[in-house]
Length: 242
Image 1 (cartoon, rainbow, N blue to C red):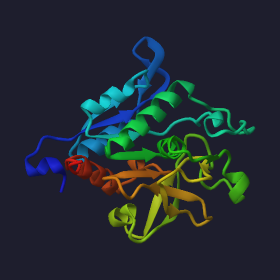
Image 2: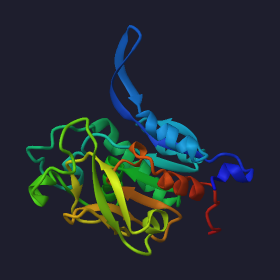
Image 3: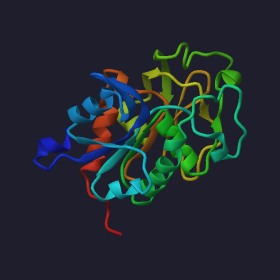
Image 4: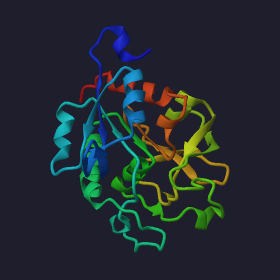
């Protein structure tokens, strides 16, 4: 049951934004935005969503946010995990990288509930010292995780029994995928909690925190919204006393 249904205030959940050209009326300008699926999924789960554009000192949002969604988007700069760019690593978002990495580390340190989605999962992994596979098809031998730009593919994942993700979704799920990168070395304190049939890591999580989960798929694009509900539920529960 969503937290709001029990009479408490709605948990405030921040969503990191894309930075992209946008058009409204006669205007065409750079904008901080997110696909509305993130907002509607959080609202349906009983949260009050707020947008968190990348900026210096954005971790100050943690004084008012009860949890954070790290949204999808372009690739991280490979220098952040000590690699040279591969030929396929061409769509970057340097204005997002440092603010989101700092925000992620601050949120995890404060035991704030976090859900990383696609790029957001990669931010979680790199923030904790992990590395990425820059072009997953070169490793798994197919492009089934992202067959075409602007299109979400579906594929099954197997979820680790006893994991936080497994408690929410069970041992199997069909997910909406649109990524060409993956997880190589897993960051400190994180464990793998789901894989695709080709062995690619599809989810990671941190067991000793209230809710720190990263998924490489896009739950906001599907009908199954249990992951958002679980994250909002965790955000409505105060952290244990230190």
